[in-house]
Length: 219
Image (cartoon, rainbow, N blue to C red; front, side, top):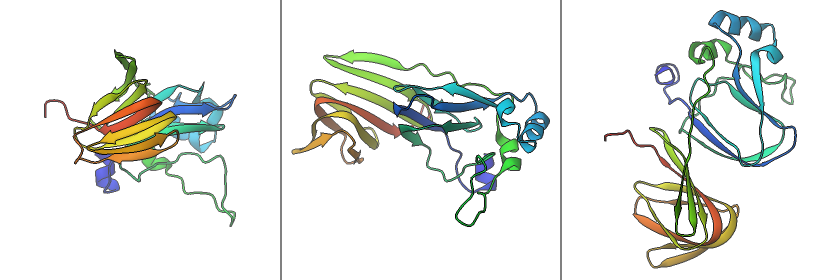
């Protein structure tokens, strides 16, 4: 609602799956402030170590970040990220980085204070894992914003495509079969299944991350 009024855009819920994480890499997940005033004071005084909560992260972890959650990454990693279609980010700190002209990036503390969740609440996410023949299907999240599922493929799997799907091959290789066409696919490749394809088949030995638009329950 705030983004619609102030930015003429959407908010930005995000999902991240961490694929390859260097030792020592940490996530910024939330803050310790108990009130808006306390958050503002600690930010203006640059007491980041006191304000920000940092957590260890390792390969295979994932996080869901609804709008309002303070978040960031400190370290090196490869991750797959899915988010709402939005260009809005409110930056409260940029590690004192500057551009080639010595100017820091714009910060948005006042707007961030209007929308940040205080006190911090870590969203609860319980992935569901099912087995279909030799394949393992792990649904990380299914809400009004997106549905995100990882398929561990070891035999042919027919996947329903209700609207459209963004697909990313995480590892391995195999084939994509849609209609009468067959395509070779492998790690690092991505493709879009449009609404014209009501279903498609994946075969081989690979892991596939599938992101779909969320559905409002009951509609």
